[in-house]
View 1 (cartoon, one colour):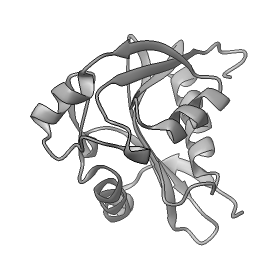
View 2: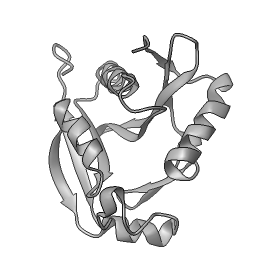
View 3: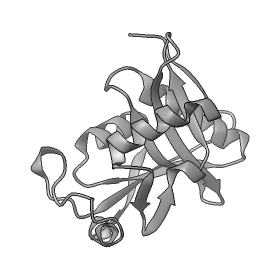
Length: 167
Protein backbone atom coordinates (compact mmCIF):
# COMPACT_ATOMS: atom_id res chain seq x y z
CA UNK A 1 0.00 0.00 0.00
CA UNK A 2 1.30 3.45 -0.91
CA UNK A 3 1.99 6.05 1.73
CA UNK A 4 -0.84 8.60 1.90
CA UNK A 5 -0.44 12.23 2.94
CA UNK A 6 -3.42 14.53 3.53
CA UNK A 7 -3.46 18.29 3.03
CA UNK A 8 -5.89 21.08 2.28
CA UNK A 9 -6.87 21.22 -1.39
CA UNK A 10 -5.03 23.71 -3.59
CA UNK A 11 -5.89 25.36 -6.90
CA UNK A 12 -3.76 22.82 -8.73
CA UNK A 13 -5.99 20.02 -7.34
CA UNK A 14 -9.09 21.33 -9.12
CA UNK A 15 -8.86 19.01 -12.16
CA UNK A 16 -8.34 15.90 -10.01
CA UNK A 17 -11.21 16.88 -7.70
CA UNK A 18 -13.48 17.54 -10.67
CA UNK A 19 -12.68 14.11 -12.13
CA UNK A 20 -13.20 12.37 -8.77
CA UNK A 21 -16.53 14.08 -8.14
CA UNK A 22 -17.69 13.38 -11.67
CA UNK A 23 -16.90 9.69 -11.24
CA UNK A 24 -18.46 9.39 -7.78
CA UNK A 25 -21.45 11.77 -7.90
CA UNK A 26 -21.92 12.62 -11.57
CA UNK A 27 -20.51 16.12 -10.99
CA UNK A 28 -19.96 18.59 -8.17
CA UNK A 29 -23.60 18.80 -7.04
CA UNK A 30 -24.71 16.62 -4.14
CA UNK A 31 -28.05 16.68 -2.34
CA UNK A 32 -28.12 15.50 1.28
CA UNK A 33 -30.51 16.21 4.15
CA UNK A 34 -32.66 18.28 1.80
CA UNK A 35 -29.73 20.59 1.04
CA UNK A 36 -28.06 21.10 -2.33
CA UNK A 37 -24.28 21.55 -2.17
CA UNK A 38 -21.79 22.46 -4.86
CA UNK A 39 -18.62 20.66 -3.79
CA UNK A 40 -16.55 23.35 -5.51
CA UNK A 41 -17.81 25.91 -2.97
CA UNK A 42 -16.69 24.02 0.15
CA UNK A 43 -13.28 23.36 1.69
CA UNK A 44 -11.65 20.05 0.83
CA UNK A 45 -8.90 17.80 2.06
CA UNK A 46 -6.91 15.87 -0.52
CA UNK A 47 -5.13 12.56 -0.01
CA UNK A 48 -1.97 12.33 -2.10
CA UNK A 49 0.01 9.16 -2.77
CA UNK A 50 3.81 8.76 -2.98
CA UNK A 51 3.81 9.90 -6.60
CA UNK A 52 1.81 13.05 -5.86
CA UNK A 53 -1.38 11.74 -7.45
CA UNK A 54 -4.77 12.40 -5.88
CA UNK A 55 -5.77 9.25 -3.97
CA UNK A 56 -9.01 10.72 -2.60
CA UNK A 57 -10.77 13.78 -1.28
CA UNK A 58 -13.03 14.79 1.58
CA UNK A 59 -15.24 17.86 1.25
CA UNK A 60 -16.58 19.33 4.47
CA UNK A 61 -18.25 22.21 6.24
CA UNK A 62 -18.10 23.30 9.86
CA UNK A 63 -20.91 24.97 11.78
CA UNK A 64 -22.57 24.77 15.19
CA UNK A 65 -23.53 21.14 14.54
CA UNK A 66 -19.89 20.11 14.10
CA UNK A 67 -17.90 19.12 11.06
CA UNK A 68 -20.09 17.61 8.36
CA UNK A 69 -18.39 15.34 5.86
CA UNK A 70 -20.32 16.31 2.73
CA UNK A 71 -18.34 14.02 0.41
CA UNK A 72 -15.67 11.38 0.90
CA UNK A 73 -14.28 9.49 -2.08
CA UNK A 74 -11.13 7.48 -2.66
CA UNK A 75 -9.61 6.82 -6.06
CA UNK A 76 -9.46 3.11 -5.23
CA UNK A 77 -10.94 1.14 -2.34
CA UNK A 78 -8.50 -0.09 0.27
CA UNK A 79 -5.74 2.41 -0.54
CA UNK A 80 -5.91 3.99 2.93
CA UNK A 81 -7.03 7.36 1.61
CA UNK A 82 -10.49 7.21 3.21
CA UNK A 83 -9.11 6.45 6.66
CA UNK A 84 -6.42 9.12 6.36
CA UNK A 85 -8.95 11.70 5.15
CA UNK A 86 -11.39 10.95 7.95
CA UNK A 87 -8.61 11.21 10.56
CA UNK A 88 -7.50 14.55 9.08
CA UNK A 89 -11.10 15.81 9.11
CA UNK A 90 -11.27 14.99 12.82
CA UNK A 91 -8.17 17.10 13.39
CA UNK A 92 -9.78 19.98 11.45
CA UNK A 93 -12.93 19.60 13.56
CA UNK A 94 -11.05 19.70 16.85
CA UNK A 95 -8.98 22.69 15.70
CA UNK A 96 -12.22 24.49 14.77
CA UNK A 97 -13.69 23.76 18.19
CA UNK A 98 -16.28 21.33 16.84
CA UNK A 99 -17.42 18.65 19.25
CA UNK A 100 -18.52 16.10 16.67
CA UNK A 101 -18.02 14.84 13.16
CA UNK A 102 -21.06 13.71 11.21
CA UNK A 103 -22.21 12.69 7.76
CA UNK A 104 -25.07 11.25 5.76
CA UNK A 105 -25.07 8.16 3.59
CA UNK A 106 -27.85 6.24 1.93
CA UNK A 107 -29.54 3.02 2.99
CA UNK A 108 -27.99 1.04 0.12
CA UNK A 109 -24.38 1.99 0.84
CA UNK A 110 -23.36 -1.01 2.92
CA UNK A 111 -19.65 -0.47 2.24
CA UNK A 112 -19.82 3.08 3.62
CA UNK A 113 -21.80 1.92 6.65
CA UNK A 114 -19.17 -0.72 7.37
CA UNK A 115 -16.32 1.78 6.83
CA UNK A 116 -17.75 4.51 9.09
CA UNK A 117 -18.91 2.22 11.88
CA UNK A 118 -15.50 0.56 12.03
CA UNK A 119 -14.11 4.05 12.63
CA UNK A 120 -16.40 4.78 15.56
CA UNK A 121 -19.27 6.61 13.90
CA UNK A 122 -22.73 5.49 14.94
CA UNK A 123 -26.10 5.68 13.24
CA UNK A 124 -27.94 8.48 15.04
CA UNK A 125 -30.91 9.08 12.72
CA UNK A 126 -32.77 7.73 9.73
CA UNK A 127 -34.55 10.13 7.38
CA UNK A 128 -37.12 7.99 5.62
CA UNK A 129 -37.65 9.08 2.00
CA UNK A 130 -34.80 11.62 1.98
CA UNK A 131 -33.15 10.07 -1.10
CA UNK A 132 -36.50 10.15 -2.88
CA UNK A 133 -36.79 13.89 -2.10
CA UNK A 134 -33.19 14.44 -3.21
CA UNK A 135 -33.99 12.74 -6.53
CA UNK A 136 -36.56 15.48 -7.20
CA UNK A 137 -33.71 18.02 -7.02
CA UNK A 138 -31.10 15.81 -8.75
CA UNK A 139 -32.90 13.37 -11.08
CA UNK A 140 -29.67 11.48 -11.86
CA UNK A 141 -29.72 9.86 -8.41
CA UNK A 142 -30.44 6.20 -9.18
CA UNK A 143 -33.50 4.34 -7.88
CA UNK A 144 -31.39 1.31 -6.96
CA UNK A 145 -27.95 1.52 -5.49
CA UNK A 146 -25.22 -0.86 -4.51
CA UNK A 147 -26.19 -4.54 -4.74
CA UNK A 148 -29.52 -3.61 -6.33
CA UNK A 149 -30.87 -2.28 -3.02
CA UNK A 150 -33.67 0.27 -3.56
CA UNK A 151 -32.36 3.71 -2.62
CA UNK A 152 -34.89 5.65 -0.52
CA UNK A 153 -33.51 6.76 2.84
CA UNK A 154 -30.62 8.66 4.39
CA UNK A 155 -28.74 7.48 7.46
CA UNK A 156 -27.00 10.03 9.63
CA UNK A 157 -23.85 8.87 11.39
CA UNK A 158 -21.92 10.81 14.01
CA UNK A 159 -19.16 10.58 16.57
CA UNK A 160 -18.49 13.01 19.39
CA UNK A 161 -14.96 14.36 19.67
CA UNK A 162 -13.00 15.71 22.58
CA UNK A 163 -9.84 17.77 22.28
CA UNK A 164 -7.95 15.23 24.40
CA UNK A 165 -9.09 12.23 22.33
CA UNK A 166 -10.12 13.04 18.73
CA UNK A 167 -11.32 9.46 18.23
